[in-house]
Length: 93
Image 1 (cartoon, rainbow, N blue to C red):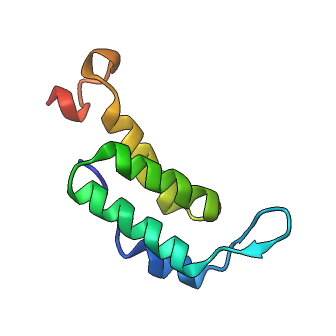
Image 2: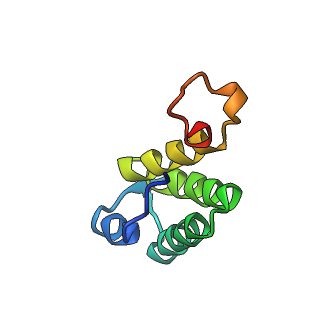
């Protein structure tokens, strides 16, 4: 089951993370937009769109583990059952 993105943008707003070589601050509106896109895509079970939004979010907020946890869950869920040796894979249940 996919992890639900809790209002992740709130956490992201509270942790000012610099990005890029110039040390620019990640734009709050951009972070919020990608977070909402990921949340909506996960709710609609659109794993491709969720993964894309989470990848962009991970680049903007490299020090937020929740983003990577959700991204890993998306990647894991996209694995075909025949490729997964794990009997507990969501598609094998």
